[in-house]
Length: 245
Image (cartoon, rainbow, N blue to C red; front, side):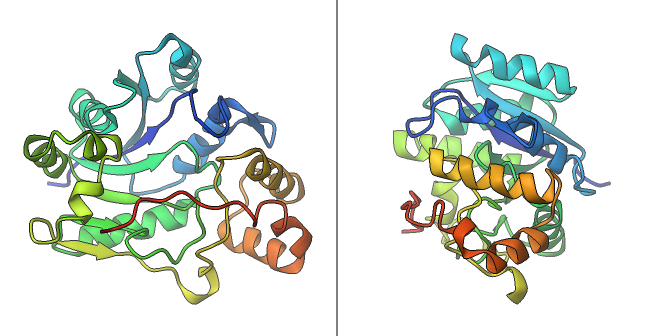
């Protein structure tokens, strides 16, 4: 019997670099709505759940999730691990496809390939960010709810709970790991297709303005490789990431 595989989207309004970014307009709709529409095109997903906080400032996120007809779970702002685990438990998710709300142009095919690798491999954790090869903004991590529950039992460190899966990939002696690498044509690990700054927003709006909101990664890369001035909109931004060790 196949297990229920759902995507969780971590989203909140209080982003430090660009507050309210998940509801900012990209391609004629809120960024979060665009991301949901793209995830709906992933064949291997049984559904989508937004994992937001109990803060009143995040009421609009919960309202948007309801309007889009997807699940919503509200939990701690700081304990993101607990929030994602709570979302999985409340919505009967057996396999979590962890994503974050700063990836509005996430490519459905990239997500599907990561899920397929997880299904085919006998490992605890598959992601495309253990060694980054895809552009920033395609970030997908796949693991069982039982693995995340195990992590919650093993650690109470606030850092581990803020970053959800960091304990998994920092402990390869406990969990088996696999990286999903990009094909050569999509390899561009420093390109920012994420939404974290005003400069990122300018690029994403420019891309969707030229290609439409549902353009796939190949089309986006072709556009940016053909027009370096677009890429220059945000290529000076330093990406904040959590190292594997």
